[in-house]
Image 1 (tube, rainbow, N blue to C red):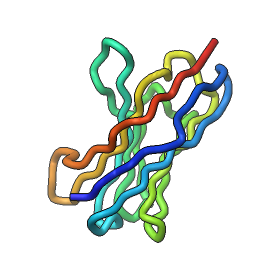
Image 2: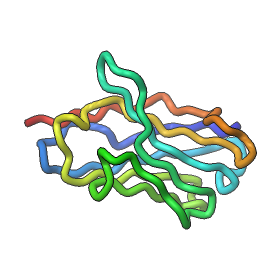
Image 3: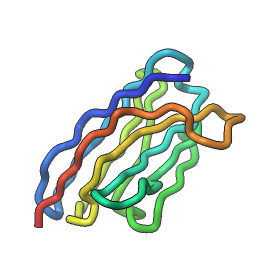
Image 4: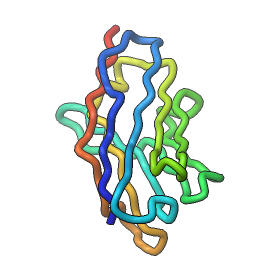
Length: 119
């Protein structure tokens, strides 16, 4: 499995933008699906977005469609989540995750990065 480290979280006003990064090491990142998830206080961890190994196809939760963009740079072993038009309800700890092509579940997780959106 890969090891993942997120960065880029912080405090931003509503309507602002942040870009999260997810640095991977340990195995061949380019062969892994990558995803972003988030967990707000007192709530379950929710799916945000996912991207296939080549980067050619993505999928988003309805709540972030049109505002968030997932991408990856396999030459840098790094994934990204560009978040625009942020809302207070986007406040959460954001986690990146990776899974091998033949696995059903995400088996590698980062430690999380806090995103706080003030109104």
